[in-house]
Image (cartoon, rainbow, N blue to C red; front, side):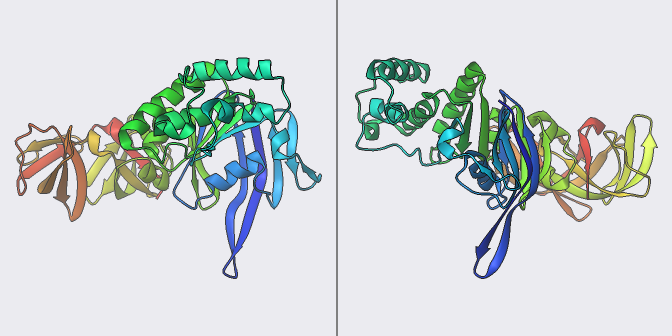
Length: 361
């Protein structure tokens, strides 16, 4: 079910000052996708999620879920949360410790007065779906963190919502369990063919889970795209920097040279992936560390080849992260653990033009 948000704004009063949490947000969330709101703390993503579900009241604007207008300031419409047909999974799971797994999951159906036999059938079905079959009588507090998260998901799904919303649901899990639960969640949502709105500040989570990502900053949406578009072809410096490790270098556009846009930087002249930028305009050259090919020795002639000196090496498991000083700039690259490169070595690096991204300054 599609969600349409038009001109939604929200302000708070804090210590005598007005804080703009949402700044006239316009957004369409496609039906049957995993749509992620990504951004730093305080950017407005959770406030926007709470406005959709009805836990926050916007100051202006309209919100539609499917064909139903659930909030409108000008028309005086405010459909209560419980009548919006939504499911919600919170950061803290919100599982009742005094209840069994069955009772936690059954609660939304019980308060609707559904017949007990129907409740038993629906709960059994959804527990089977989230792989908790046979644990219905167990106390919720005797489950692992990942299992508790699946109980919260089952409770959100049991009432067959039109849309399910997630507010940083994996942030309380350790790194390994977070990765496993993320894979399970993507699989579950893919099978359901349901609209899911997911809030996180974790870029890896957003990239791994989402069909589409909206990157937010200071109450506004900066950019929307697929994970691949956001990571490899961002339009804005903030997005390129936030979504992953990046070397950002000021650039002046020289012009087009065949299929490449050519820019001048402190590192020298770079041929980049094509962008429609006027000669003489200012931009930012973005180079991901994983796309820098580092070799020992002085640079040789070639496209996008730069020399430098290794300042530091850090072993992070599958690779070394190496800091290279070049033209007064400190650049981050990644090299194989077996590379014969050491601190203080002279090196050169090269970057394929396809991986030299130009973004707004």
